[in-house]
Image (cartoon, rainbow, N blue to C red; front, side, top):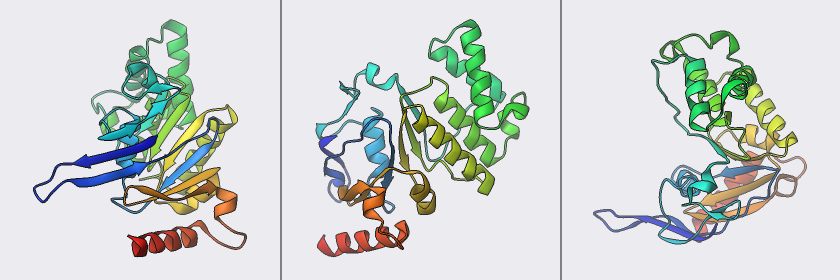
Length: 240
C-alpha cells in the first residue's frame, strides 16, 4: 500500500479512516497489524480485499491492483465477526466454497476433508452449522478461508470466541501456514497472541502507521508487547 487514504462522508464533514498509509508485507511472514478501536485496521484490510476503494493512493497484491479479481484469487479471509449459511452442514459449506474456487472431483473432496481436520471439526462436519457454538463457527469460517490453499491469509481477530485450546490451535495453524511459505496478515486485540506468533508488527493510530518493525526489535527483552503498544499509542495521541 502506498499513500492510501480513505475518507467517508459524514453529516459533520468527511471522516478520515486512513491517512496516507504506507505498508509493505514481505512474503512468507506472519505480520501483526495492531491498533486501538477506530484506528483504521479493518478499513485497510477492506481496501486490500477490494471491498472498498481508496480515496487516494494505491494498493497492490502479488503485483496486481487489488481491484482486479486476479489479485484476490490467492487470498483467504476470516472477518472479525464471521457468519455463513447456517442451514448447511460444515462439510457442505466447504464443498460449496471449493466448487466456487473451481476445485474438482477427488481434489475437491480431499481439500474439504483436510480443511475440516486442520480446524478440528472433522467429527462435527455432518452437523448443521446452526447447531455450532461461537467457537465452532469461528473454526468453520477459518476452514472456509483456507479451502483454496491461499498464498495470503488475512485474519481479523481470529481468536475471538475461542477458548484457550482453540487459541492454541489458531497459533498452530498460523505456524503451519508460515512453515509452508504462506503469508499471514493478522489483526488482533489479543496482544499476547500476537507476541507469540508474529514476525513483524505494525501499529496503527488515526489511520497512520506509528511504529513498525520486527517483533524482536520492537519488544525489548523483559518487555511485553502490551507495554510497547500502550506507550506508542499514548505518544501518538499526544502528537496528534
